[in-house]
Image (tube, rainbow, N blue to C red; front, side):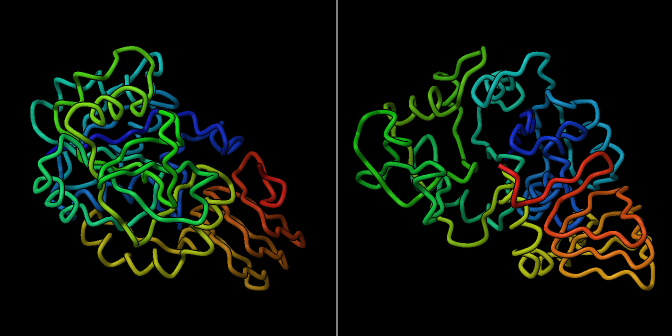
Length: 313
């Protein structure tokens, strides 16, 4: 089975960080978010991967190609004009062929069991299966409407009146039937492909009750790094065996003054923390300097900016 990874978006809600870096490369515990997806795919035996790209496309491709990921065959589909989730997938119809494939967003941190998902999908006989996750934040994130064991609506956009505490996780197994309903120009897969499957063969769902977090906002990005630390470092050995990287709080390539204080923070490679500096509950992306005697609290920083979490929207 092949995988299609959506990696073309602008990451608008993470600006100004994404002014300098594509969102799929924003690190969580010093590992690019996209690599968490690569890890799960390879562990499930899915090594033929297509990534669509647009924003910072060259930087994304160069980083992945220079990372020495063994055993993965990664093809990039660059969009000169961004095509959205629907148009980007339609563009890769020939690359994906006439078989089922796995669709994954590049900005999620999860431990979805892809092998169980694929088995469930194949046993269902449906042309598509979405992975859903229960959360008390479903109303604000966007709930999925269900009826008779099938997905029927998203945020009541189809006027069904169906409400749930479940959200779409950005992960699905889809059959080639979906291409009949996708549009070549800019479009949403929800409005085109998913709606088409709902009305033609049915759209099933697979419930995931484990780890799931996106990094689409500063608050969810903080959560992934500073609240899910134990869960993610618990994946470290498996990730290292699979793709040769492991989540970690403090990069061994960071230089931290012996009398500096670092508490509950993620420190990236080539960071420099000066004499008697204090860093608390913060995330330092690679290359950040915290000057001597200064204090950084509750913020995320890259070499160009500092964003306090309490001020981020």
